[in-house]
Amino acid sequence: DTAVSQTPKYLVTQMGNDKSIKCEQNLGHDTMYWYKQDSKKFLKIMFSYNNKELIINETVPNRFSPKSPDKAHLNLHINSLELGDSAVYFCASSQVGVTEAFFGQGTRLTVV
Amino acid sequence: AQTVTQSQPEMSVQEAETVTLSCTYDTSESDYYLFWYKQPPSRQMILVIRQEAYKQQNATENRFSVNFQKAAKSFSLKISDSQLGDAAMYFCAYYTGANSKLTFGKGITLSVRP
Image (cartoon, rainbow over all chains, first blue to last red; front, side):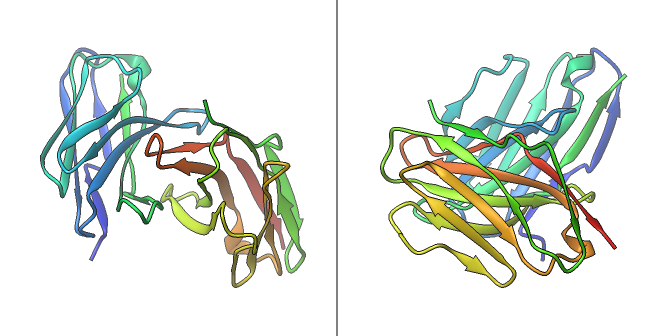
């Protein structure tokens, strides 16, 4: 069983479109994250949710909106996609008090 | 703000030899955690090793060990008996409960020569 799974693995779309990336974890963790890895491989946190509540919202354009329907799911919706949004997006989860994060396999988003 | 610095962008090691990857960090917190993650070409992020700041003993996981120098804010990873499968990007990361997020360094690309 995959611990943290993201769909899709690859996403190619045109500028201006709206797209979503889904994430699910079956580890029973209470905290979930979205990270962005840019073309230089730099990893930066975007959002963090704890028990469905937003606790971290880094400086991210408001075209990006996370949604957590329950503590096992954290989806990322992106409106009006731009070329600069092309990156790998990672979902991760952790348990408070345990600290290490477990990552999904990443979604490579390419905006053309 | 916490920062994590990996100043070497690339390193190379001969198979079966030992290599050390460097990492420094800056923080005013006393309670925190440090990690090394491995990212192979498959792009999956894999936890290699973890160190709690309150523990003086350096963490070890099989061929992987760390040299944690809290006063110097240094956290290096030593890979012994390097194998071809160790070739990957390695990221140093810092976590504190104060802001509940992992802060990553820029990563280092490790290549292993057969």
